[in-house]
Length: 219
Image (cartoon, rainbow, N blue to C red; front, top):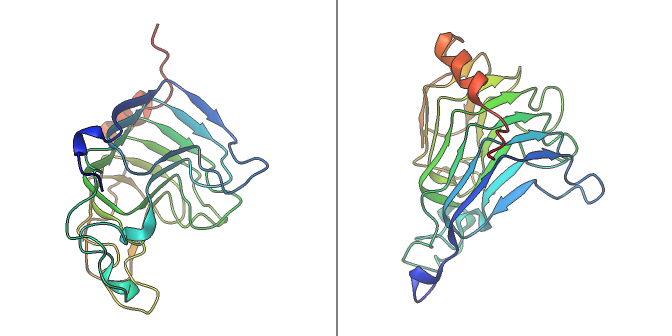
């Protein structure tokens, strides 16, 4: 929260990178972390083998978002939104992420992300028999995120939503939309607080998305 939102960090692009094994020694280290910033684009990268999440958006489990997180049993600290909005994760390849620590996935969202989008990524071998809790993890406090047109080549959860709070109440992660993705893995949530569709069988559109994803070097 800032007196002048115009001073917030924003308008950043992270593109054309090959990210390999961040957190090899300090395991609790995602590849890219975006906390309180807006209009951040993470696109055309390849993330291979991460101990924790490849990309993490947000912080604080929604406690500092507008209205707080009602499932934590503490009064809301703010009645206005943070500076976060419009962050996008698109056209990346993710493989073998969150293979050491739990609760990570390829992309993890913690807190409200108005106009946020995770789209047209190719996620391979995410959390298969390991601990990441799915390719996309919408963790406690995640709100307003759209997950669409991603290709999930993973046997376990494509998207996991932690929408039940620490004391069992519903509503921790809510108002998110998951639709138009491809794959055979499940979309999981405990409560009915989000708009969810199961992934579709792979088709020509899915192949086109997978082919276009990943690191592109711009000269």
